[in-house]
Length: 228
Image (cartoon, rainbow, N blue to C red; front, top):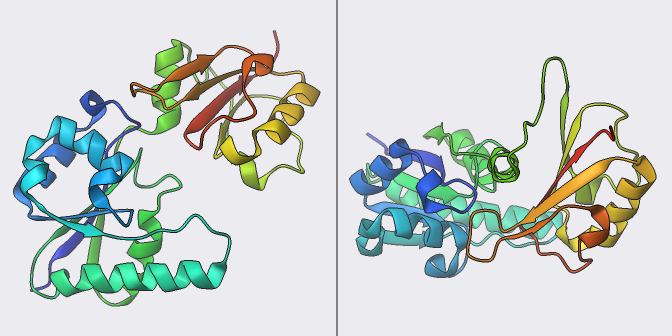
């Protein structure tokens, strides 16, 4: 029998926010895949190893996922990563692919998952705490009340659009285009808070749009509510 490929969310950054299920999967399986050319340098590894020291003894698979808009380069790397994973699945070994946050939300794992499933192998998503839930908890605010809507937007792909008039907006993937994102927020008249590197030693919190630096990093998340 072939092995199973698990896409396991390790949460947003705080090792204490990893689920018991993901911890168990890491302990019970020997092959751990990580999204990067050097597995031990990935954020996912650093989070997981703090919660599961046994990870140091596992076989780590580097799955290179380039930050590029070149679709052909993306496809080539995804195919290469899937082929690597499948060599172990064919041996009957499970592979646990660690991914940040939740494995169903803007996850790099999804691209490998689609290829592996198309090739006839079984995959399974394992939930983790998503970054926007952790960020709301860190700020001690509810994401939504009563009948409010929550809009989750990949900000870097929505720079030409206006924000919804009502509800809570979660802006992800904002870092590389932060100055433009800030202009959109200012025009909207909405209130906004931002957390960079939530749950890590490098965490920074900003309580107003004007406080947010244009040089904010990739792991920056904005929660924007209607002005009261």
